[in-house]
Length: 278
Image (cartoon, rainbow, N blue to C red; front, side, top):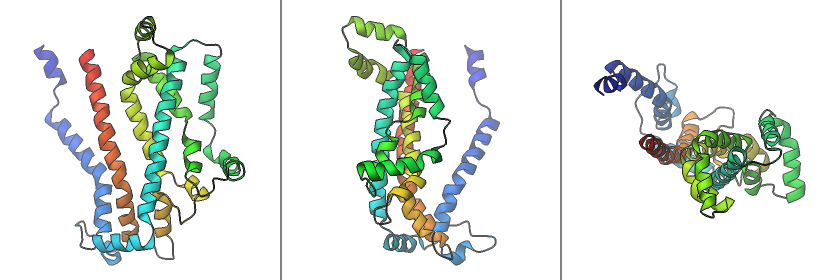
């Protein structure tokens, strides 16, 4: 037992290396704070100042005067949260069906799903825009952002691969012996087992949807923007006001950090529970 504990202990060099990696990873965020709190002349120095300045509130005030960042934050949160919940539920349900249910054409359906992941997104932009504009009339509406991202092939494939090994077949058989239907088995058995993978998928989906720029730029107007579209309008002009842009980016990144902190805790809890059961 002592030898096993000795093998799992980390040395001082490991912590030094991890600390260096953390510092390098956090430096871009710190530089955003420094640039957002300085003026244009402050960040144009050579070498630039590495200490936060005193212009953060002024830059935030100018940014709010130029773009409707409050509405952009609300739009991005509504779209990202709705898409995340939809993707997690549908991907877990489809992944459960492809991993544990036996039906004809299961492998062919999985192959088609994987094949769709190889098609570049840009090839479907024009047909998708025509569909949103002519079929549904959803131009400049948030539904045009939610519906195309409500189900993803990556999410289905990701959850299928996880549930193949993480979900014992015995649990499903025991639920059926107790009289559970397929949907009840999914809700009471599959979802608790899939919680760690669902947290990872939810975090990735929320971040990708929040950071999406090209599709919202096409279907939304500057009067009804998401965060990324609002930030792009700040970067316009002959001379880019970097403190202004980074002040907006600093506001736009706060929800991402909150979601990462909340779902990261869920991931660690799921991993710890799995380790205790093992």
